Image (cartoon, rainbow over all chains, first blue to last red; front, side):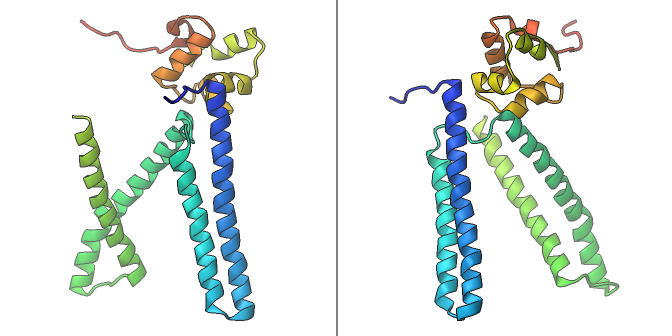
Length: 145
Length: 69
């Protein structure tokens, strides 16, 4: 049986696991940049792959930290801030998709204007995100029924 | 939502950080609640009321519109 943590223990665990996760990610990112520098000197592809491996190890460390943490790593206010930021991003993506997709289709079909590939890729990528959001929304809603 | 958290907290001589640790949230969370910038969850509101040994409606004034007919 898992012992219930006190509020103080919850805060301590949150700080402890956050620190481990930050260190893991930090070590991964720093290792990646160091190996990039080493690669520019040695020109050995193996060094690049080693850097990538270390970076992934850092990311795996982050995942393990999140998975095994006995408490949520962000409290309710931090989650609320993330939710508000997500709202802003979602509004931007929705606007870019609603305005951008029809405009891209009409303008490129008529030959009036063809946006750069990066812009078109982003807009169509946003549409994919909207579809993924719709699927996730449908799934999560189902969990409450 | 208006609240009396800062009054109760100062009455017992606690800092925002102390209160945050006591109820398991960050200091920023307590600060945002005290400044009416963030409405806490029901669970956190109950924790705060339990900590100060008062009723939840003593601590928070939801300022809601009349309900029912």
